[in-house]
Every structure is written in C-alpha cells, then in structure tokens.
Length: 327
Image (cartoon, rainbow, N blue to C red; front, side, top):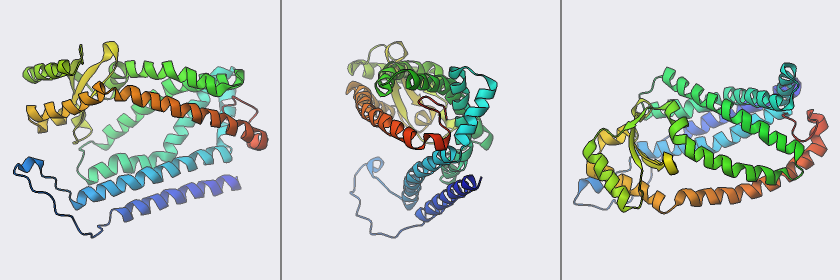
C-alpha cells in the first residue's frame, strides 16, 4: 500500500508538472519577427500571430508531457500491483484464459482512461475552447470520449486476447504478432470509413452537385477511379478545416469537412483536395504502412527480449505467472 501511495503521488506530481509546463509555455515570448514577404494577392500573405505561437507551444508541451505521463500511469498499474488485481478480478468471473484476457484488457483500458482523463480533458477540450477552435459542449465531448472507449473495448479486448494467446503458445511470438498485424491493419483500413467513422459523425454525399462533379473529374485525372464524395458534420466538434481520401477498394472515398465547405470557395476546395489526392497518388498510405511494419518488426523483436528477461527477474515480485499472463 505504501508503494502504491508513493507511485500515486509520483503520477500526481507529473500531472502537476505537466500543467505548470503548459502554462509557462503559453506565456508570450518576445522575439524579433522576420519581415514577411509581400504579395499582391492578400489571400496568400501569411500572418503568424502570437496566439498561433502560444497554441503551438502548448500542443508541443502536451505531446511530450503526455507521453511521460502515460508511461507513469502504466508503471503505476504494474508496480502498484493494480494490473495483478485486475487479472484476479477477471478470474473470479471466468476461468477461461481467453475470456480472462478480454476482461483484463477491458478493465485495464478503463483504468488508464480514468487516470489519463485530466490531460485528455485539458488537451482535447480546454485548449480548443481557449483558442476558439470549437463550440462543442462538455456533454458532447464526453459522448465522443465514451464512444471511443467503447470501440477500444470491443475491438481491443479481442485483439489483446489473441496477442496473449500467441505469447502463451508460440515461442517466437514477436514474429507471430507481426504477421498477424498485417491482415488486421488492412482490415481496419477497409472498414474504418464505413463502420468506425460513422460512429462519431454523419457522412452524406456531397450536397453541392457542381463541386462534386469537379472533384470527381479532378480525381479521375489523378487516376483515382470509383471514389465517392462525402461531406461530414465535423462542425459539431471543431471549427478547423480538413479533407482527406481514405479507404481501399469498395470503401475508397473522398471526404470533406463541412467547415471546409463553409469557409472556402470551390476553387480553394479543389486546391485542398488536389493536395490530399496527391497523398493517394504518391501511395503515401502504402509507403507509411510499409515503414510502420518495418519498424514494428524490430520493436516486437526487442519487446520479446525485454519481456522474457523482465519476467525472469521481476515476474514473481510483480505476481506475473508466466508468458501471456494478462497482469
């Protein structure tokens, strides 16, 4: 209990340190501003304000502080014996290892979400409101957060149980996990536009028929055939603008945020989509996937080395029984 209290205080101190660092980063920092190049067309003059700099500094600090804080949360759950108690609670419900793993993962995710909520609230709700980047209510924010949690529980618990099964049954589980991740990632790319994304927003065919024709013509010139054009009601969550091309095969689509359509002319929208289509044509998604798989192969290999050594050295102390133990 004393160790758990110390770890809890350490996590709280990290959260306080992160908050102070974010606050300090928001203070104006006088500096010499370079002379901005002049342009005859006012639309193409870039004006970087002090408010933009503050927003950027806060996001930078939140990114690094959040990474450290998330690591501290995981250490708290492991070293404080909470993960072991989560496994024991799951075993009181069922003795089947696969179901124990699913329940353990679900309880673990809930615990992590609760412990990380202060930073989540500040970064995803308080900061956007401070800089007038959203009108979303707290209730709607919590609704989206709970939807995301539900998706993580449903999808993640099954994947986690399969991963732990591989740890128990396969000697070189790092390779098994890597090979298993390939079809899973491809499946997620296919189903995300039609199953996951609609959970959070409403997607409808682009209402502007003239713009839809122009976009499809532009896509055809870029070699993107058979894509559908949709608009999404992102204005209920943000005032920022974006557009993208996602999906593969039958789920391939062009998507534009309604904020983009409201603030830009048709010509500007076509310019934005030209950029997004460029990612698709240049196969950045596939190149990114290949890069991710190459990196994950190395990470999983070293993960097994660290896991096996750590298990031999600290497994008994932490109450971990062996490979594939949800704790």
